[in-house]
Image (tube, rainbow, N blue to C red; front, side, top):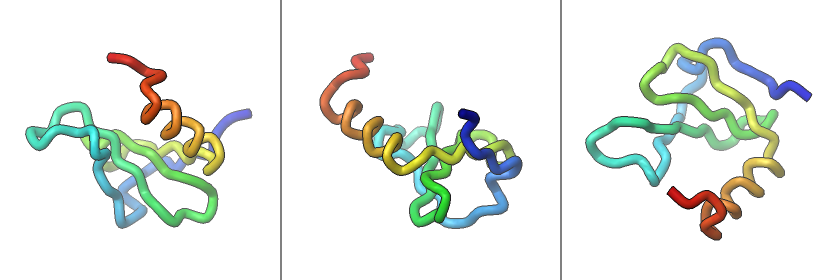
Length: 73
């Protein structure tokens, strides 16, 4: 299944940067809460780039895995 995509993420307002992003910028992920189709995710360095909409259940599973250390650096 192909995930829904928003071609221009800047069309949506209310983005927040990942808490794992450092204060100096760099590789930053932004998410948007409250979207009816799921959790939009975009690269903060490309504001007008695409935003991928992740289903809520998949996003919750991802966050749980990150918090439990399933993705070591």
